Length: 154
Length: 142
Image (cartoon, rainbow over all chains, first blue to last red; front, side, top):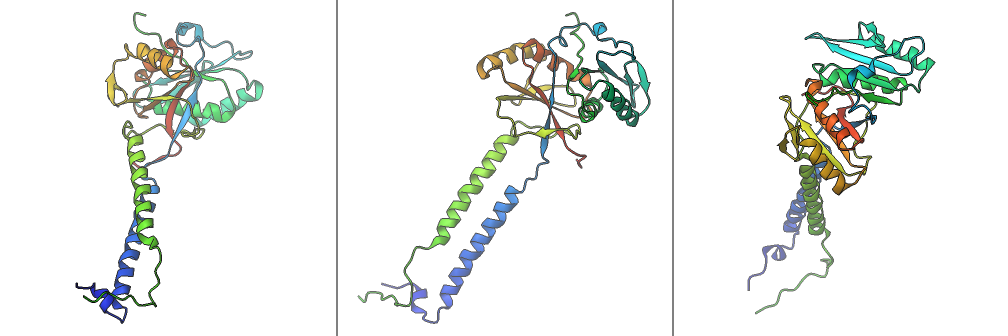
């Protein structure tokens, strides 16, 4: 019976070859392991939205903002002129997004627990809607909800 | 026939290398397969950006993910669903999964809000209040 050549070689040269192969094997495995565990995908977060029970069924007209001086809720209307958004907070036109923060902070300092209703036009890109929602949450408003237009014919 | 004689200098022990090899292979297999299973129903979309987003894995509630393509198609479990059929489907899911069912909406930041209104309306009609939007925490290169 022929014995494996490595046993015949007493100088140990065959053993070191074998050891290298296993080591490279394990190193490659580790490499693949770390490549796989480091995520290629961008980490996704979630933005919980609150939907009040009346929002889905209440007509849009009922969401008209109350007078600015004594407000019960804050209504942010987001419009879209085809290229850029425009905002109205309780019927006060807002030119830029930076002004929204200041305006919301002022409102929050008066009544932070007031419900805030976002009422975007159907044409507004979702990015701006979420941006406004995010800003309202960051300002401290806890009850932020979306207004939804009723179904056509419904 | 002469029997092979092993040198006494050679230590006889368990070789750990193949075991580590196999264990790592199994780990990688399960990692990759679970990763692919997660990605299966996820569309590559430029999600909106929000700083106040929560960790997506922090919630353990049953969840249904609705992907909204840039053309306004609503995809549930990889299949297109009409917005008129959505309330009934959501009611069925709420009955099987429980009242704490989460509806996660994934949509492009450039899609019009009109595409998302029917979904939110369907959720309220189905009695589901746990609605979340998938967002990115910061601007990403697409």
